[in-house]
Image 1: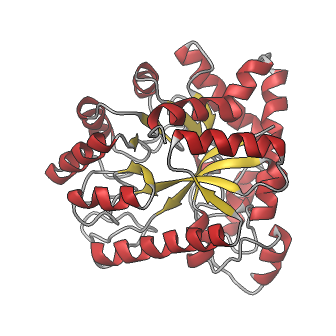
Image 2 (image 1 turned 90 degrees about the vertical axis):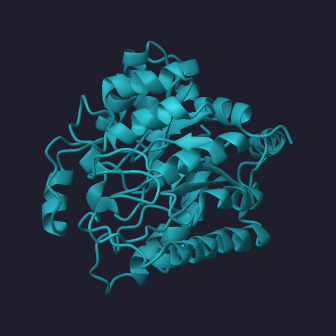
Length: 361
């Protein structure tokens, strides 16, 4: 079944981790045999593995945090200034452009291109390039709010104003607070262009302020449910309902600390022990919670965040690579979900949102 994954940090993996994503996952792991950092030897994503997973569409990110020492979150360092964040994100975009020139990826910027790509993929899933919509996780690479238009011209279609800590624009994960004046200006610029606002990582006050201010399309590209796993990285039932009422979609993430209550961040050995308590059933639990809470299958989807700064040590124990996303349909089928609902969750809901949000073309 076709998968539309709404959150993959492909360029970060390539550039920051020095991973050649054209290689097999097994080869990426082999090449990291002498590395000791978190996630090393435990990659789950490469372009060949995504094809096996039938991930034909994704939101591919650019991201680089700007450090603000007084509000930084331990474990999430950043660049010294926004100009550096801008340059690094431009480098990530250049990586995607290089893969496009090599026939491995295809950027999608409008609804006509989206439908054309979908038709091509359905006709030839083994030969069609990976379709991607450019997204930004944390808006620090946008140096000034009026730079949004420049990024839009380069294909950017979705932006999350914050990541961990505090950006120029908003408070994010682990740092309670709201939008800044620049954040409000950023949202106005995005709104005028019809971009998708990604609410993922926004602190609660920033979430509600953004929802009140922003009139355009919204989503939470990679967010789980606070009712199942407490913590400000997940969203409350009220927040999930609010996204659904605006026609938005929530992509469930596979980061194990967002799936297991009480996960303690620590070293590799501790993560491996905790991982044994998490299976793909937990992913289905979060999908099901969104569906039951909103009363339909229209607002739950996949935003895996696989290899988002971690590897298999921080994934469900029955996931080895991204290809195991194909286990989700059988898990949902076992819970009584109809085929129509499973299709909507695996790709249909994201297709509907972006068909409506992207310019016609």
